[in-house]
Length: 212
Ligand SMILES: C[S@@+](CC[C@H](N)C(=O)[O-])C[C@H]1O[C@@H](n2cnc3c(N)ncnc32)[C@H](O)[C@@H]1O
Image 1 (cartoon, rainbow, N blue to C red):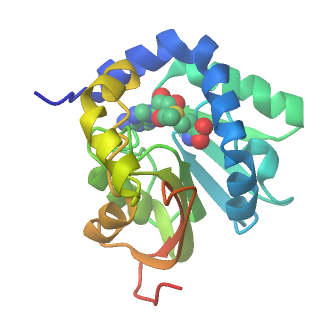
Image 2 (cartoon, rainbow, N blue to C red):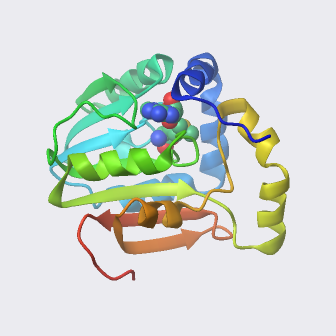
Image 3 (cartoon, protein in one colour):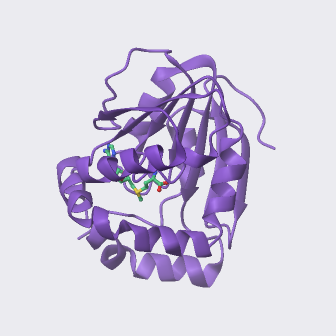
């Protein structure tokens, strides 16, 4: 049987794990994720919604002038994010909510950002549809995700260890982010993969465009 946590179960797990999350961030740093965050987020502009912000690892990478709103389902993760924002002198409006049912009207953000989250949302398509709904028609959706490696051995390892990996925090590491984005009806305009094609940097819009 696969692991299928609800948002409430994931939130409870993150509430408990939040103080240890720094270890995960250290691992991400070793894998070069900080550089990927910086590269993706320099494309953010205007009013920005960050969906499932975690402890705020993206906050220091936003260009000057962005007006940032950040949401997460876990209060404990957001409390740390609040400190991260203060440490970096970034002004952020926070909201505790489910990414799959965002409490914002349609077309109200210029940029919607989410990183390392499609692996964890119980319904990643619903979350992507919500990102699209709240993003202005001429806005952009910036995603930094990890998924199943195209390397045969690594991909196979991810499949075999899927359940034991998902058990801790509900992270399904063999999902296919680009496929999810397309299934949600978003149009990727740029999509780059790195590190055994595990990490995906995706910029998507609501209307159609070519992948470069
Ligand atoms: C792996 S962490 C990534 C955090 C951050 N985005 C980053 O790049 O470091 C996943 C985050 O998603 C949040 N999350 C999971 N499911 C959620 C949901 N349905 N709605 C909102 N946040 C959710 C968790 O609380 C956690 O903070």
